[in-house]
Image 1 (cartoon, one colour):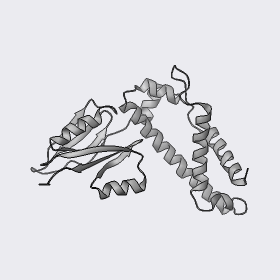
Image 2 (tube, helix red, strand yellow):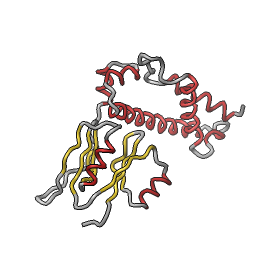
Image 3 (cartoon, helix red, strand yellow):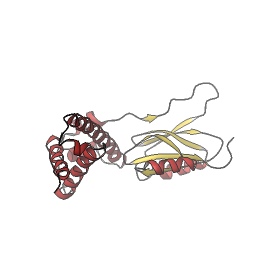
Image 4 (tube, helix red, strand yellow):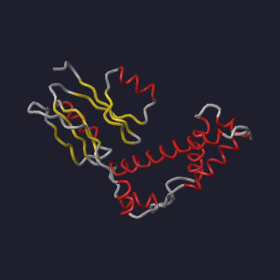
Length: 218
């Protein structure tokens, strides 16, 4: 085992000790096996150590390297916090209650709701008498939202925002198509943009939403 492997193993253990929440069983046993939990922690630690150029090697001789490690760990913690928040919204969009979410996170329903209840991701409404009409597609989940967007798109409505259990759409003079992609890489994102897809918002983990017009515009 190399010194880099030892650093990753040690950092993974640090993330495990510093975890603010401990997952609780949901009634049918743990959702993740111990080996799966270990792989996630090791993966985070490996990314923190491996992404900054030369960081792991510098820890053998350079005190400044530990400041870079601290900054990289901060970025990793912020990203993990963002993913957790978006995963909670994804679970809610899949129909799970705040009670269930709280049990998975090892906190009460009230604590989960207070920490993770999210506002809608919506574009500013257009002003003026000629502004396009908007409406809300409500009662949506992760399992029926794309069918609802497909139907709306055929009628000339395109997505401009979203939140728990709804999408906001805006009227236009031509049909649209919508899609969602799981964690698109930078290369795939650029390829989709080159094919005319327009991202809507920053997405909710694990999904990113896109739309594009179909047929002539205007």
